[in-house]
Length: 366
Image 1 (spheres, rainbow, N blue to C red):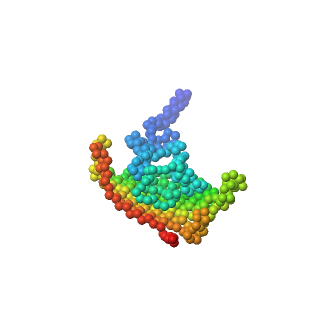
Image 2 (image 1 turned 180 degrees about the vertical axis):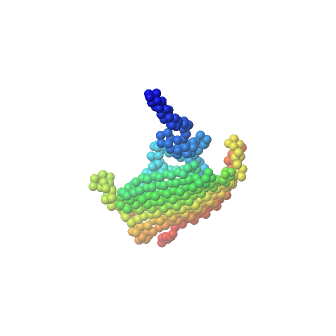
Image 3 (image 1 turned 90 degrees about the horizontal axis):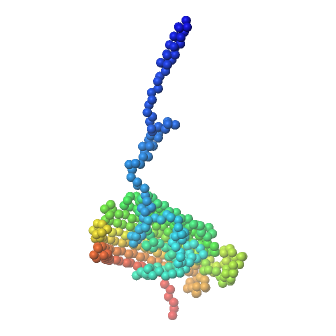
């Protein structure tokens, strides 16, 4: 009986062992997460691998700023003392000029520039041209990725200054930029409001074979300033002595509070050339190009005052409303040749139409 029981127990135990499935060891997929079992990692690993992809990251040296003379510098993003000097209304170092009490007013010049001598007379109201952007003040750009620059600075008494700039290369051959600088500052003194705007659009283009180059820009500007003639003689003592009752500059009475001036201007400029003979390399220089320049600018300056003030002398009219305008057109055709033997030769023929005049004429008797 004992033998029969032992046989049945052994048979039952062997049956249990035979009934269990032996697990099959499979090689684990390396793309499956061993913890979560997520198979999305398989796609992400294939899509993010960069072993066979070239490094196409843009370097800071690829962001170029090109001047009218075709001198190029790359974008400077460092924080330095020079950047602090340029953090102002004019966006340049104010070492040789002395600003007035409010942002956007004129400056006292402490030096003289001998490089700005031209053949044609300059427009009137030169004191209002510190922030007026001339042809040489406009730059062109080449950027591998879109570039944006914003500058904000508070002014005096409800004053704001904003300079916004954006440029992009739609292709390797064409660049486009748009910018606007706006200012409105009430000022510390009475009737000294400043309101200005500088709008500019630039573009530059070159063909794939590098033979044709074109650069163009459009600039529209308006610079308005209220005038008060300065402080009265009786207030100069309180101003110079530092009387605490006059710390608030708005309590001073100015000479007048009914005058303002405005400078309005726009310009359309195109400069393009075609390389007939291109320079092969940097050792053998032999190139010939023909070019054309078309530039048109229009300016208007106006000064108006309800009641003339005697500090400027006697006036011809009871109400001052004077204006002066300028229409300037310049066209040029040129040819440029460069070689190692002769150097750089340029010949041009130009046409200048200069229309400058006032809106009225005063004739004095005697």
